Image (cartoon, rainbow, N blue to C red; front, side, top):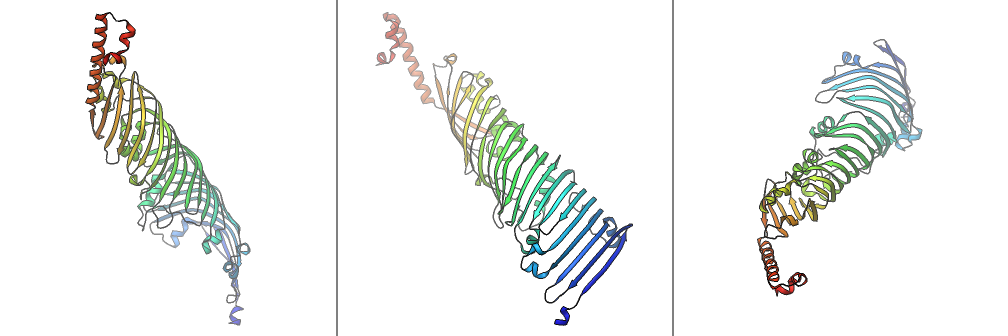
Length: 461
């Protein structure tokens, strides 16, 4: 054993040339039995396009240039004792004009990149690349990379990501289509990462986001989004919250959204959640602002599982048209006031909750011209409607049997709402109206003054 430990292995400068580019390797190994002591150096230029001429690459095309200048020296005991500060690893690796083509994946073009490493950190800088039609510029720093790679310790780092166009459909959906035990995007608990994002255009699931910027913190299996701002659906959304997906658990999203001047129709067109829970948005003309806080499980396509969602929020609009709302047309027809549907709505505010697959609202008021409506109730994931309301008629509508208001309920489903009027209330109002007319006429015949006639309640008795 002792004699074996005296063995030394030396690789004298071993050099070769690929496409007229020199590359050399030097290495030595000492005390291989008691405590492996090794050093290695690599320096030179590699033309990756020459590799497939020496070793065929199946389902892969690779080209470009790697310029390396690397030195490593350590003892095995340093690694076993996690003394990574004594592990000497330093140097640079530069990439230029790298082209990587893989089967069923977007092509990767790395225009330039420089990786600098020391025993304490890896620094990625000057990196510009294209992934398919997506362009990215990246700067990153990773600390404790040796402890992470060798012992599974926590990897700490920062990332600055910039892009003019980035399609998550190209990347995330390819990942989700891969055959794995679970398609949820799991976040390792030994990652401590802070990312700053600035993207001019992001595409995902038929949606377009412009001027996306904010911070993303990844730690303990959780991704925290802080002031993530984006222009979308005709307005702006600012998101704060977290995505939590530890191994073996269903991923969940807990987040708050501040929305400004979002188009009703675009929200319906682009958000499956809106189409399922608030299809009324399709027929609303105008924009809304508001806030939403929600907690929900996510499916394997990273979409909310609606029946697990718990949420509350509010929305308001300064000006909205209800002309295409079916049930409002039914109300207008029943009360013989066709002008109701053409009245603009001003300063509408609605508070709502989402639970067990239903969107519920507390009573809220709608001012449409001279008409005043009050509504409350709920709509469901099963497309059912359960609403009640009251419409107060203007004085100009007094010809309708002197009715002051009409109570109603709305049932059925979104595609076929069922409107029912409270005929008992209407009949009661009609009787009261007849009494008032009779009292006025009696007063006129008896010559009673206006003050006596005005005291109708005492005369009714």
